[in-house]
Figure 1: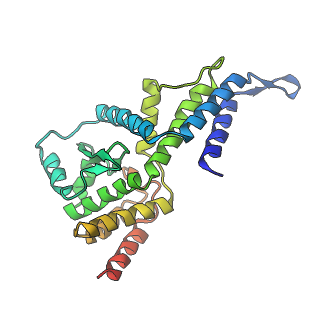
Figure 2: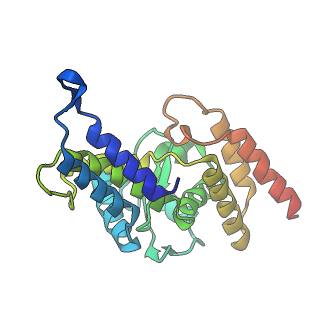
Figure 3: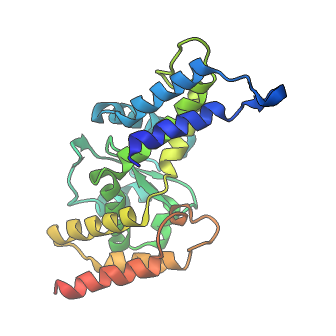
Length: 259
């Protein structure tokens, strides 16, 4: 089943979610206009252009920044992150990269299609520079390989279709409210990628480090450290990822093969 049909099915399910049974087995409260609106929203989500995704990423990133404490310019975290990403391309999928540190003990990092890259101080505290560089490269890989765009499409469909399904007449949600934007932002940041996507992002990071002639061993030791947190509280970036131990072994094998 391709993404478009998945989203249509999702919209129909959302539209029916609040319907109860009427006497004689009929369906009460069925809103056909809402179902059509939800279906239209799902189609829009499936066909989001790169420009649409960038605009929504701009809004989602700004919303996230408002909800988090950002490391001050020239602070030790800001200075260190600037140092760590030296040598990386200044753009990501054509968008200028924009790095910030969130001051939180959570262990996480993420990137969006507009070049917005956020690293949590909790991750920085447990990683050396090479390890941190490898993890950031991995998150950039999700954007470069199109995983983040697909996550945005799914998140938009779930968030917007819920309201469209309850709409009356022929109304279709075209702009997200503040609450919807908050929900969308959370879904994007906590997007669950498949094991295939995670492995592909690992390889992307490895390949980029190789091209830049940077230490790739840090990607191995980063996963070894993360392996100790698998299933632990606060390790939000690990919730959907494959075994960190297996990922460390895979990268080590690639290092051995490319000596």
